[in-house]
Length: 190
Image 1 (cartoon, rainbow, N blue to C red):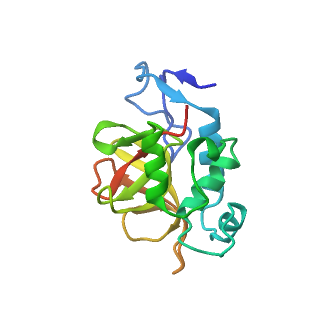
Image 2 (cartoon, rainbow, N blue to C red):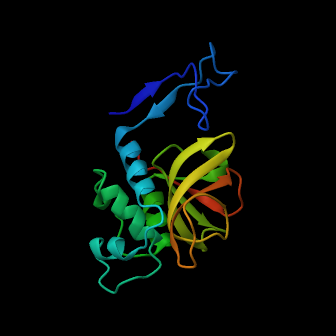
């Protein structure tokens, strides 16, 4: 089930006792909240600062650690109730294959024509033949998309949660919605 809400007031994240001045008495546009997508994002957030071996092993990659951003996303999806076979995702770490399958299913949107929602996949790269990285959309706020990405570092995007210690890990990052590194979005949430 997907729930729809209108928000009247928002608390500041930095001080939960204060209400946002501009929000009181003004209702937002309709906000879509999908409990399964929410669960997936919370699970992904709980994995910040962790490495990738578990995702590769549980997702069927018997060759050990490879570029594991895809396996991280698949693992979070499966552990949140999504059936990744429904999306025809192979047991492959190839971001381009995942993106092509999303396109075939009508579940892919280019960044210029779509505003992502919580739980969407975010696909990075500089064109249809250069899709190099994938993550999960945590939220969109004030023209920025917040993501949780496995197998990432401090290059490209601002780290907002997690610590990079020289080995690719799971981090939360922030980028402008029109960032040139964003290729598009995979709509996995119903």
